[in-house]
Amino acid sequence: MTLPARLGALIVPLAAAALFTTGCGETVIDDAKTEAAIEQNLKRATGAKVSSVDCPSGVEVKAGATFECTIELAGGKQQTATLKILNSDADVEVTDLQANK
Image (cartoon, rainbow, N blue to C red; front, side):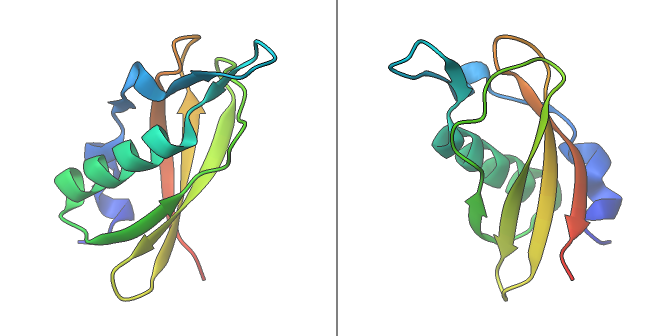
């Protein structure tokens, strides 16, 4: 079964601990915590061996906004995960997972 076929098991909110407030008072997603949560959830949901996850820094917390993270699997294959910010607590969920060509 491919990773996109298992996406249903991965569409779960990631920890609200992904909040970080910058010095300017702006609340942004903590990219390091989000990367760790994606890696852990992907391993648990699909059994995939994840080499790395890279999410953008400085993503402002706005409910409904989306952003993308790049996932590198063991063996060098890459996936792009689209995440949606669910609320002002920075709960996020993976809404799409696609293989990079």
